[in-house]
Every structure is written in C-alpha cells, then in structure tokens.
Image (tube, rainbow, N blue to C red; front, side, top):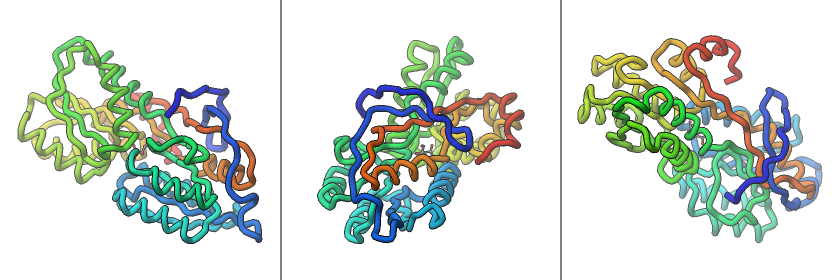
Length: 325
Ligand code: GZL
C-alpha cells in the first residue's frame, strides 16, 4: 500500500471514525442494473473467527435489498484458490461490483485484471492485496501495523525491562493482517528484554490456537511468561490449553490479543487476558457507501481506514456491556 495521505476523520453511524486517503476516479457502470438495483458479489474469507462473523453480519446488513442491493455472498472457507474462483464466478455472472476481503495478499493480479477488463469495479474491505492499486477502486480497512505496534508498545512498557519469554500465535500466513501486525509488534519490542521462544500460525481460529499452544506448553512449559495472539479467537483457544496444563491465564502467562470481540473482552474483564487492541469489523456501512459511489461513476478515496482503540482489564469491565459486537 502506498503511503497514505491522512485526511480528517469522517464520523459515521455506530461512532466509527474513518480517515480517508488518496483519491481515485469512479469506475464501473453508472447506477447498477437497469432497475437501479446494484448486484454485488461479496467474496468473504470464510467464518474463521468471531471477528469474521461480525464482519459478515455488518456487510449483509449494509448490502440489503432495502438499501438497493442484490447481494451474492460467497465464503471461501479460508482457501485462497476457492476465493479466486468465487471472484471469477462473479465476473462471469456480470455483477455490477465485487467486494473482496482477501484471505492472502498475493495471487490476485490475474483475476483482478479480468474484472477490470470486464469493467467490473472491485472494492477491498478488511485486508489488502499486493496487486497494483489500479486494479481496485478503493479499500476500506484497518491499520494492522498500528494495531501490532500498539500491542507491542503495551508489552514493552509492562514487561520489556525484565527478562520475559514470549510465544506468538500468528494469523493466517500471507494475510496482510498477520504480516502487518507482526511488523508493528516487532518494531515496538525492539531493544527490550523480551525473548521470542516460538512463533507459529494458528490460522486465526480457536481450534488451531489451542493446538499450537498445547505444543508450545509441551515444549516450553512454565518458561512461557507471555502470549501474543494476532486475534482473540486464537487467544481463547490458547486459554483452554493453558488451563489444561494447570496454569492460570492472565497471571502465570500474560495474554495480549487483537480484535476486541465480545468473548475476548469478556476474558479480558475477568482477568484471563491482559490487553486487547481493537480491530473494528463493522465495515459494511462504509463499504456500501463506497460501492454506490463507484457504481455511479463518482470519485472515491483510495482508502478509508477505521481508527482503533485498546483496552486493559479495568477499561474492559467498564465497556463490556455496551460493546456493539
Ligand atoms: C482483521 C481480520 C482478521 C481478524 C481475525 O481485520 O482480517 O481476520 O483479526 C479474522 O479475527 O479472522
């Protein structure tokens, strides 16, 4: 992603603030189908986590018939090749626009070129792609590197001055969420007394987070002081493994995660997690707004970035009941 020119935040329903960047011309057919209904193919990653479920719900709510859309939904079960096939199918169906939450960053050039040649605009939501920016109209998402940096800074501030052994549960290999969170986190802990004992992907799922954590515990046992999980769900899976090993999560092993979904915030407020950086999944409304503009041939910004916040245990207790997801 090119360096972003951050413009003022845009307050939206649901109190989500966005920063808009760059500027791109409109694309696609003006106004959608003849009847004004906009047919959108949405290629979702799958249903790997609580965050993904909240994101899918937000998107389906925004791309409703009442809002002037005909939504064709595909969840690719976290399989990149299936997701590419879904996008190709949308092109063959002649949809008015494609929305894509790309599982991984690479491998998109060919099918996005096919969409461009078919004059079907593609709008990215959530994660990003390495393909050229002229192959998609806009991206609505989050600053993953900043999320990782925020988590790393909290770890550095709280544990960086004493020898601390950490294990990491990484998100989906090759996804911009995992890659950029690791980049931000690693930069924040540079020069501290934090040692990374091991780091392995848990594919953003509870099941894999639990399995990988079981392996870490067999290998390192009570040497582990800290767990950084790229999302709440892997941290929640790890909780089960930590308890099964007779250790106290949040005390014997401190846990820092990213997302701030309800189950994660519950674990944080009851002391099993220690810190969570939010990653807001409610991108549907903004994405639908951008799709309408692009289909109408209006210009849109190249990217819209949701601003995140972070929570410790005390803050989580205060906001838990009012959380929107
Ligand atoms: C982040 C999103 C990640 C979440 C995970 O925007 O892509 O994927 O952090 C989800 O929970 O599975």
